[in-house]
Image 1: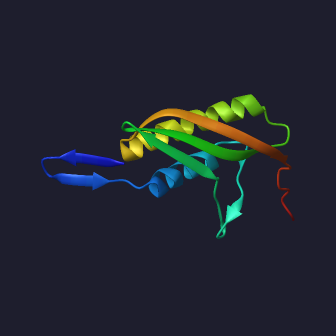
Image 2: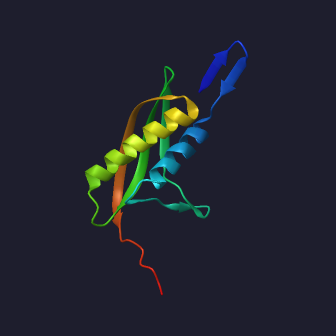
Length: 108
């Protein structure tokens, strides 16, 4: 995504938008993400068109959580985070829920 002004050009890569999206999803309650390189990271697809982004993100939901409510929270969190951190307009956030995970139990 490129932004032009009289000061020059600013380019924001899809990887940055993907990272922002994954982090926003990870911070949403009742969401689980696959672990990649030692950190939670959601598979994210970005489609850029006419200066806007359409985002698809894949998550898991903790068993017992309300799936629709959790997915809607992820949609809001991802859209807000991407727009506020990058300035890229988000037209749509599609959430794919691929499974349920059991909450981790603390070991004494």
